[in-house]
Image (cartoon, rainbow, N blue to C red):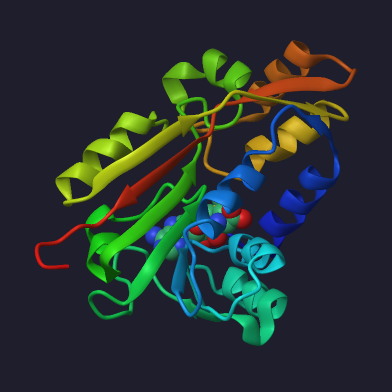
Length: 239
Ligand SMILES: C[S@@+](CC[C@H](N)C(=O)[O-])C[C@H]1O[C@@H](n2cnc3c(N)ncnc32)[C@H](O)[C@@H]1O
């Protein structure tokens, strides 16, 4: 899926129709990043989208630091540049071929990106550096729907898929935090918008939409998300 201005509009409308959520996992994620930052440290956010992670970091981290972001979508890069201005350097790049030298960053972050290469992140991190990322769980943020469309879920992965790939690339996994977040949305239209705004169900069709409408009815909709936060560290001999 290409992230363009249409997807951006859908994501904005979904965010504004969220009535309440039981845990603010984003706030916890940002805290995990900021608590490992230090003066003049360098941070790279991969699959940065509109620059959300870097923008949130800047709200709480006041020491000087060097912030970088990459995304392979031209539209997202433009948006992130607009949102962050001179506070960060944003480039168009693929997470699998990061345009940076070995051992460049103190911290690499990723939020809901799903497509990245652990070995490429390992390469650009300094020894002792952290990779801190938040991902969708196996239910991809919509557990009730994931249970119904089990056979057709796209890239449904639990945290052990990532911990294995991290270990294979040389990382030490520091922590895995799993969450179950209940979100309440204004109505079923919001859920349909979410389903259409990211790769979730293979060959999604109008009959699937009818099935979702029947499941939730006309009232406010409660839906469960199963995200996790993983912190991994690069240690090298002599580093
Ligand atoms: C669900 S959005 C998350 C954006 C942002 N991290 C956030 O949480 O607001 C996923 C982003 O990853 C980007 N992306 C997907 N695959 C990528 C890849 N191989 N290399 C770089 N960016 C990628 C998409 O263009 C999109 O902006």
